[in-house]
Structures are given as C-alpha cells and as structure tokens.
Image (cartoon, rainbow, N blue to C red):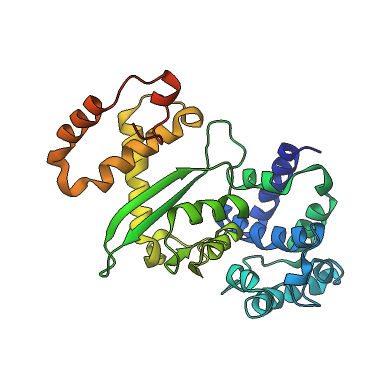
Length: 285
C-alpha cells in the first residue's frame, strides 16, 4: 500500500464520521491525535507517552468503553508525557459522540500497512493529496497591540515535524511566542527555541477564534486576490511565485508609493539570469 492509498483510505473514513455529526475540520483534529498515538507505536517512540495511555491501551479497550477512555486519555496526555506530547494534547477534546464511530476509526487505522509508507510522506493527509493543492506555512507577526506587521508564506512538501522544524529554525527568532492550531507538526517549532501554544480550532468558526483573527482575515484576502487576478493558474507549479507576490505587497503596504521605484532599482541592479532563476520568486536577484 503506497502513501496515496493510505491517504485516500483515511479520508474516506471522513464520510463515515459524518453520521456522527463530525465535520471535516473536526475530523482533521481527531486524525491528528489518533495518528500521533499510532505512529508513536509504529516508530518506537512511545517512551514520550505515559504508560497505560498509549495506542495499544486505546485499541485493547472494550468497544463500549473505548470512547470514555479516549476522552480521558486526551486530557491525561495534555498534562503528562514529553513536552511535545503535552503541547500537542493541550486542551484536547473529542468531537466523537458514538463509541461505534471511534471503534471504526481505530480499527481502520490499525489495518493500514504503515510499513510501506515513509513517515514524512504523511503530510499529504493534510493537503488531501490534490494535484493542484500545495501545502504552505502561513506565519504572521503582530505588534504589541496585536496588529499585523509582516507575513511569511512558505510552500512546503507536507506538514511534517521535520519540515516545520527546519522552517522554524530558518524563519523564527528563538524565544518568540508561537500560537498554532492543533496539528501535531507545529509542535516542532520548539526545536528552534520558540514558546509554543496550541489552540485547537477543530469545528469552531473563525469568529470563535480571536487569536487567529488576523491570519484568517489575511488568508481570506489572499484567496480573493488570487481569484480576482487569475482566470486560471497552476498553483502546484507556481505557488512560490503567487505567494511571494502577495507577501511582497503586504509587507510593504505602509509605503506603497515606493514600490515602482524599488522595482525599477531591482531591475537595473539585476543582471541576466536563466529562466530557472527568474521563475523562482524565493531567490533574490
């Protein structure tokens, strides 16, 4: 079973969970928790988790009692285990209402052939594997009054611990405070010396997430900007260019009058470049 097969099977479970009133966003949150527990077992890293609160303990519970144990397990993991585990499960809760629903999810995840997939490839789960969708990290800095300053939009191969750790080391200042949603991979910012705070967003509307007000607003503006500027575009191929253009304008919005001059100076100072370089918006002239 290749990575795409696993991604497809896991997303098909979302249709089953609809009968339990679990929304798409809530399913992503549940999937994050369950996959973290399962992959800790598969990769031999369960020593990060407290004894009696691991994947096998959840799997071996009697079906009628499994949901009650799972909810207690989430609460327990938010206070015990490694620092990474506590960050991921901080304020964690489950949206599943029926024990049978959780049992189906656990059973289907356990049946998958995890030995045929590379762990770093699992980032496709959060991009849903679409050919024209590219996962990217969006980070926004705020001033002391909570107003947006600058944004960073970086295309990424997938939401993996390794990718996020590398991004954080290259783009974040040590000792800064990072607020993210409940995806497990964002806990890796701690490796760059950042203080990480998790705000689980699953199922809640943007208006119910004041901490993400500005980033949600800006991402909405990005979507509108792309839709209004291009009748058709190849995001999978040119994502870095689209995102870099938006980022350039946003981060210089306080001095829009200087943009034409800055562009002229850059064009004059930039010598001949091959097409490969010109098409890479992330490379400086």
